[in-house]
Length: 144
Length: 322
Image 1: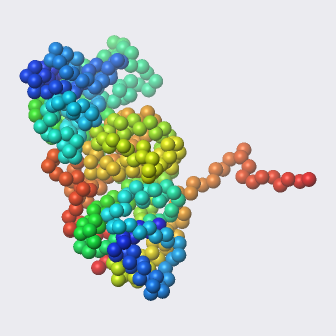
Image 2 (image 1 turned 180 degrees about the vertical axis):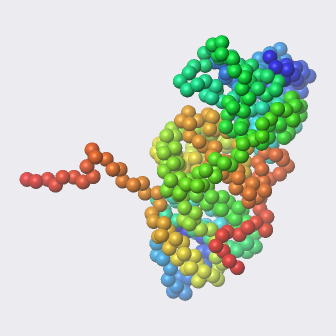
Image 3 (image 1 turned 45 degrees about the horizontal axis):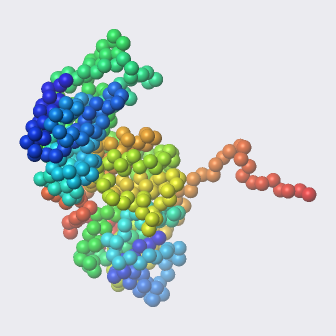
């Protein structure tokens, strides 16, 4: 799941597309007004709902359309990463980075890196199947 | 009766008699031994209800936003409670002029469960506080004198601010008999030695037991939102059902909402009927906020909480170059 700020990173992703760059297709983009709009609860909700990695990208510091939204995000997001890491979500599943509107190559690279990191970590939080001697995991075939 | 208790009652009576406050928030004897209950004293002749002993565990700051409509309120505050009051003032939940802080220098609160041997009962146990910070425990003719530290609640053993950081009246000796605090973040580091899979398994097992009674939220002085995110219908962040995933979401978000605000009073964990070690999440964030932003919650009513501000020179996210 990628949360991209409207003014820089979404435009960067758009440029990557119109420049016919290829990047992993398993990213789902949510356009937000600003990286400061990304409520930490969005990130937690992603992992609760079964996403395996989350990208939050915004304008470089100083370039924020709203002047300071990305500065707030820069304080929050590392803490989210730390808290979720403590709860067992590997820090590599969360990437917070800057992508400007002209950095299409960088966007493709960030997505590729995150996807690769997540692929190495495997799916998040799938509990091992319950091994129970009394619960048949497969049904007996029915014979006439 | 301790001298502090007498002094507390005198101060409370004086404040009420002089009309300086409309209400004194303090502690009174609970309905069972070794428990106290919050007391709401409105008349000077009722100050005899107030008690001060090693069982005044509640953080009364929780009640401040709820009772502020009566007028000016005096609050009996231990070190941790006073930091909660600072947080409330800082976040405009109560004006500084409207609260009179009766700061009590605290030598820690007793964990009732540590008092009795496992499986034993509280019947027949008598406790008296010494002036030297030791407790005398008597049970069935057996008399033991214990340093308070041995039977303190965990949060008191790691407490760094026994003396209130802010107070209108200080009762007790700020340099009183204190034991050096145990390293508060050891419990965090212990978890960090485990692998992500082990952490996941640990927290899933812990949070699976949560019954979502919200006692942790209700007792928390920093959880004063009128509508908590869990009660919102739109967006509906999580289900009312206490499934382990919903419980995980609740505790993760609650911990984050307290980042840079939690003073570590540990009431959430004490109130938890399922004994879930909730405050470890808060303690992790406390350590991170100190390390990253050099900020300790609840010390300065004039300061801005760390997530409500920024510095242009804050560190950039890892992995970013140029």
